Length: 454
Image (cartoon, rainbow, N blue to C red; front, side):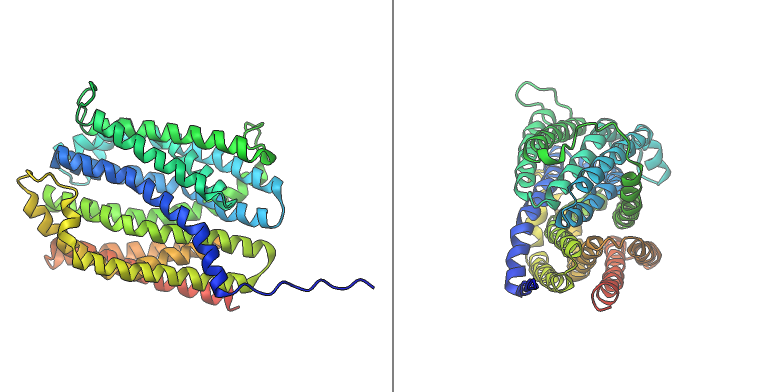
């Protein structure tokens, strides 16, 4: 008679904490490094000129909205690969990653015509002619980076799901260095390069994405030969294509709902004037930097939840979720202290000391950061819940929750407070807070009731 194997004891909370940090810290670092690319654009263009910064904020908002929507198919790779790898289904790892590359490239190509007519779009949204013109200059060039940027996202998700997060971090750090050097040369005309202003920042971004894509492709070929990821890449796989598409499009629309809310807030700030828009852009950059920590922890939660799903371990799913949420809430508390304690020095990092409107931008931005402090717990809760739900491949209901929270609550409340009650930029940001708070409550409730406590 064969003895039954004794099941391994469940991991302790301390073990889950260590495992989450080992996986999550490089992901946090890679998100911060990725964010540093757009941050360096904002800082260096802010020192080049306020109108150049406002144009990049406006153009970058449209690019980011489309990029995030297309990234839904890359995000779908993370839980699918994590679950397949945990279950030992190596062929499935290859199939879903290949088809995610197919879909992402196709999406990127479809976005390019929009960038060529973006000035008309911004003028139709009530933006000033000069800022709209600068925004299209930026997008006409930076739009070329959409396809390689989406390919990079797919490969990062693939490698992260295989817990190869350090290479993702190092490649992204290298991209930051390339972007800073490219900006220094092309924005200001240093080292014999032409002075291109906002167009220089866009050209540098294209270079960054192409270099990053080349490095990740080379690494994937060398480090994961068992998947033969790029062999016969041209061959269609309808079943895997359908699975990636079905999981990915709700993720893309969910992300679009949130990012679209922030882009809509940029449009409303543009109605208030160039200085409020510039201050808004700076405040967004600062709050986005802290959000990258939540995003990295959310990715780690997605991977660990996907692996728990692959082996059918619901105890690990529950304990891992508790640990990830606790880490995220701790970070939210630290962020509140930072935003309320030293807003002026943070905003000053983005402005030339000789800028005549420096004091006005700092004053506006200080109020916006105070409003941002209000939604830190809500923002961390909603992105963490999304990460956990994606890990168990639940994406459609969260998509509906996001649409309701951001567009039936967040945007109308922001508009009403800003223009109905005359609260200006503070009103716009309080609208953001209300939408994020509702999303956090709805999504956390769904995860705990439907996916763990059932």
